Image 1 (tube, one colour):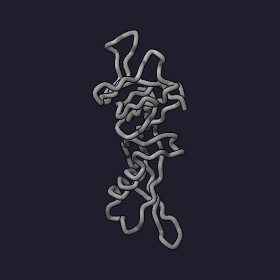
Image 2 (cartoon, one colour):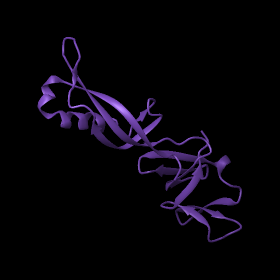
Image 3 (cartoon, one colour):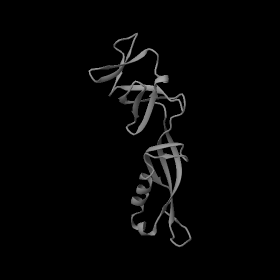
Image 4 (cartoon, helix red, strand yellow):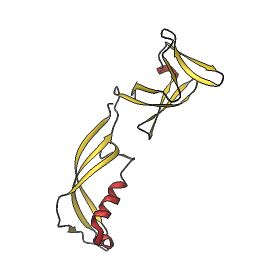
Length: 153
């Protein structure tokens, strides 16, 4: 699937002095706060990380609370879909106007009726909604189906 990339990042994590006995735990907690949120700096959503501490010597920042900065190298797995990329996800809801999809278990996407191929027709039989192809009857989209689609914006 397109939209996934691995990025090498040189980071500095600022740790409070009260966490000086467990620096590695404080670093992991700080990096965990980045997960599953969009960050403009990384131009995507951080899905996973692998971290390596570069320096064992931290630099103390002057101020009221003298935090210390720890330099890290991190490999970040980013989800950053761009227009015209192919992405796949699981259909969670169908309506006559749209198809609702969950990508990678956390990101929501919607395909509106104008973007659904003309070949597909919406049907509601016995309370079960689906889109069925007119040319290939076995080709259908229903809740739970994995589909691949192109990102528009």
